Image 1: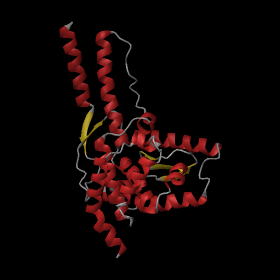
Image 2: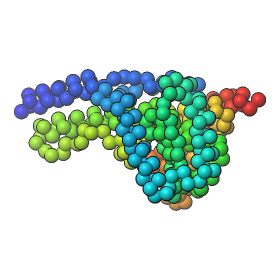
Image 3: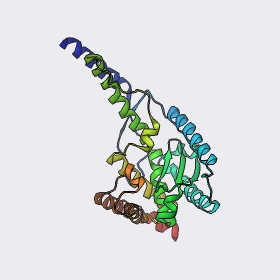
Image 4: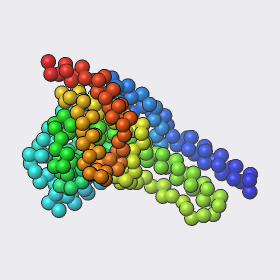
Length: 271
C-alpha cells in the first residue's frame, strides 16, 4: 500500500510539473511588476478568452432582456471614454493587448462593482457610479486596476492553481477511495466573481493600474481616495468589489509609493 501510494504521488507530481510553465505575461513598466507566474499548459490563454467571451455575451444578453444594459447613455459614454484612454496605454505592459477585442458596457445594478474578464471584456455597475460618485481620475483607477488583472492573466493563474489542487485531490481520492474528487473543469465564473484575489495579484493590479492611469493623463493619486471611498461605501459592511479585492492600510501605503513613481508621467501629460 505504501509503495502504491508513493507511486501515485510520484505520478501526480510528474503530471503537475509537466503541465505547468513559468511565464512572464507582461513587461514590468515603471512600477516594476516582475514576478514570474506559473500557468497550467492544460488551459491556454485562447481557451480562457473564448470562455470569457461566451460568458460576457450571456451576461450582456441577460442585462439587455432585463433592460439593464447601458441604460444611461451619459454614464456609458463616460465609462467608455475613460476606458479607451487606458486601453490606448496597454502596450506599455502588453503590446499584443492592443489587438484584443475590447468591449466596455455599464450594467444597471445596485452593486458597487466593476470587472474585466480575460481578453478585455469590461463591465462597470451603475451602483459604483451612483454610490461612489468617482471623479474621472478615480474611475480611471478602478478601470486601470481591472484592466491590469486581465493584462496579467490573473484569472488564468488562479485557474491553474485550482487545477493543480484538483489533481492532488484526485490522487488522494484514488488512494483512499473517497468521493471527494474536485471538478477538474476550470470555473471562470468562480474565479471572476467569487474567489478573492491573492495579495500579490492585487498589488500588481494596483501598481499597473496607477501607471496606466498616469500615462492616460489621469492623476494616479486618485487611486488612494478611490479605495478609501470603496471601504466606506458599505457603511459598517463591505462593498461588493472589496469582497474579491481586499483593502488594507498596507495597500494604501503601496498605492502612495506607486503613485509617486508614476506621477511624473501624469505631470508630463499636463504640461
